[in-house]
Length: 560
Image (cartoon, rainbow, N blue to C red; front, side, top):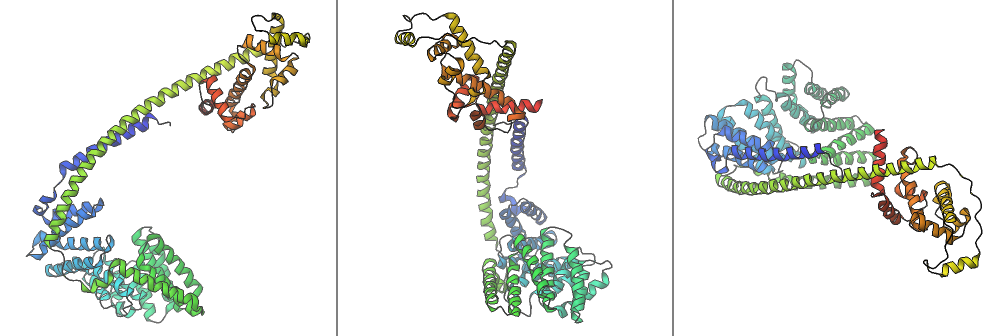
């Protein structure tokens, strides 16, 4: 495993940064027991910080303490921060925990306090959130009058002060509700007012004009404005605009149904389904099956219509169970201080456990860092050793090749024949008592052996043997073995392995020709069929494994 020094340094800096960050957080931390002494603005800011960092439980505790102060005669900072805390709690319970009952409780309490304070911006904000909340319940339960959601959405539009940046969002949701659920006449007043005060064209003005066209029984013109609005909301790719795009697409799908353009409607429904599945907008799943049900019903395919009707009912039932929508109508007052105190106590215990965990993680990180340093040093030493062995191998190959080129080719005379009976008598006798063999003859035999081993390609064939060497040299096996033992100080098998390993090294260094070969392929190319035997002999001769040698050869080739 190769890890650079820069990587080790980055890991060390990261570990040190984690420790310093944790120490700074501990120094700045306000303990939960002191939270009740903070002002409403401080609690609101702390809750927002917890929410941004993903600590939702701590954020809920902060917002709950701030909201609980509305139960008394709250004024000034406590009043406004309490109202905003109710809004924050409502959004957390709605989008984080899917507890719509608690979300409605918090929003209702905040809206009531905002009315008492006379803050029109906060009234509009909380009314809009309540309208969206009730809209999910009423659409899921097919309540055609929308008695809760539309009045809240209208109230948000009418209470939004001049220049409120959320004004367009309020109108957008109201108009899309009217278009999606056939409630256009109830939203026309707001649509007219918005178009009159809005000088520039945007997606909301396009939808307002579409609503007016539908009210005038001109669906074709309405479809044109719907396409304009769709192009505008698709320019930004985020979750909020994806939700708006999904709403506009389902409106377009229903409008195409009214015009009888079923194939285009189904294609638009597929695009709507892609957005719903991608962003997990579970409240949009029933619309998919409902539209498919009506599509197949118009086509006369009762089987598929029944299947999609069943899926629609299952989706509505699942949505109601997950989000607790049936309990929305029972919304009443919110949380008591006793529950908030219990949550503070649990938060304190959680903080203690977190501190202990951080210390353990820090200790483990230091141990891990020490191990990384040791591993780095070991890897560096191993790399230096392998590099030295590789250079030594290259020097030996260079010396051998130079000696081969310097040696002139000599034509050898035929060797004198040896009587088989005399050879057999020599083999039966011990080495100490065997007759002496002519030293010049043995030396000549060994030179012939070297010439064959260094120049004959047949040496690197896996069938090459001592018998074949005997035929190529022109002498008997007894003299050949005696010559190898006396001058090479080894036996035939070991000598053959030396030449094959040496040739394997040459081929590994020839990256241009053999660079794409595997270790097994190189071993077979020099006559070695056993991978285990090749690795053992290669390491014994060079001090390196074939894989390490091949890696160094590739690195050297890349440098050149």
